[in-house]
Amino acid sequence: MDMAAGILAGDMRALARGLTLVEERLPGARELCVKLAPHTGRALRVGVTGAPGAGKSTLIDALIRAARARGERVAVLAVDPSSPRTGGALLGDRVRMTSHANDDGVFVRSMASRGALGALAPNAGEALDLFDAAGFTLLFVESVGAGQADVDIAAESDITLVLSAPGGGDSIQAMKSGILEIADLWVVSKGDNPQAAALKHELLAMLALGGADQLEERVCVVAALANQGVEELLAKMLAAGAAARADGAFAARRRQRVRRRILAAAAELCAEKLPTDTPLLTELEARIRAGDLSVVGAARALLSGGNV
Image (cartoon, rainbow, N blue to C red; front, side, top):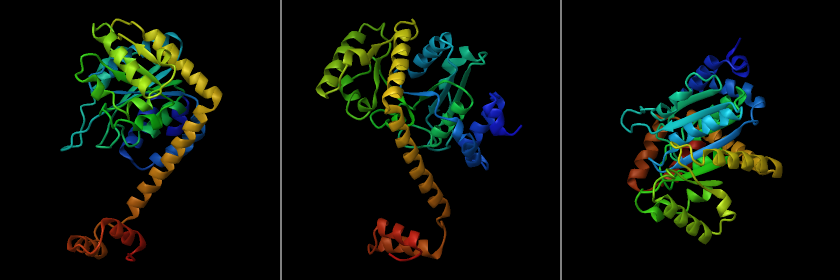
């Protein structure tokens, strides 16, 4: 049985090997994604983001338990930050999800961000496709949690949760435009903290100023460790997913996702074909240093073979 057939049959070893191919960009990764593409698009993809320490992994762990009780098959892609020196990563987010290690209906995979901007791993979307093709019905992707710039996750998700935790310092600074604007549901985590109610009030006030609608329905207070509010949040997630599927919002998001991936793949293929050590490149570098050529002009010359 080849790898694609194994993934479609639910073979977790084949899935793990396929994820490694995709993450490491090894030979055969692109061909694997092509074979599996017709079998994707069925699962609900939920992005989970927020500042470091907001409780993303703990919340996902609680949501997995609630989702499994409903019969969902759940896969998690947890993205961890990479070292700027070695490129390695601790890959520690899944430590909080080890209680599901013996559950065949749960698959948790960590992936290093590899320095990518936007707090997602470069091939996170392809990894989610593999989960989808393997028959998982609910997919979580947890971002690094980089703060206000952590918005790429919305492009790879059908539903996006943005977490805010009480006691995190200047809550207004933490809730600036950008990350809040990508949310379908806002979550006040660590809801058993005495400051949680005040944070919810501040969040509602700021979102109202921004013109967000249905705030009371879309702002959830959850204490994951105490299992408070988890079922309610899961129900709202699934309802939002069903509504988006019914009104065509899913189709629109997924068209945008496909277009974004096409452009990213095209840029990657172009980069692979560009020379990295040629007389032309040396000449262009010298002209930039001399001040008679801009970086954009040099890039155009490189792409055209020398014509500025």
